[in-house]
Length: 168
Image (cartoon, rainbow, N blue to C red):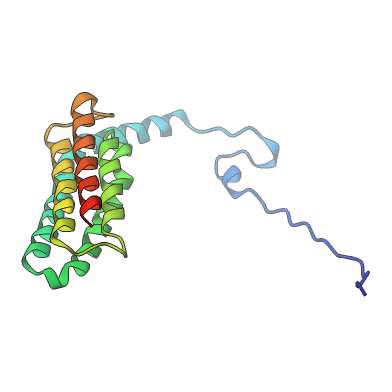
């Protein structure tokens, strides 16, 4: 027999703290100081100018991890972890600073060196292809989708991954 006891329902209304922070508490319209927006935009633009130099250091770290994968095959998964951390940071930054191809390539590398990553020499060569593609984006300052250069880099990386997948 089913229990026909009444069901008690409680509704919780949480305060919208974000609305309070922008000054729209109590039903008022949110007002964001245009000067603060302008200041933030200027800071982001200044950071965007430095992005290529900044990310070049990350690419160099990736190259060092890759070299260790070549030199010490037994420790590849340990180096994959380091590459994965760097790629995670890079994929979050690329689009923010006008380099969406960096985000694409870093996201691909992040996935490629994930927990189930292969440890063959061919796999390590695909990692190098990712790093080379990212280096080309920065060296040539390929912003946006990169036009023909961006298409060529993307196709080259995709072809390399496809060849690896056929062999693996």
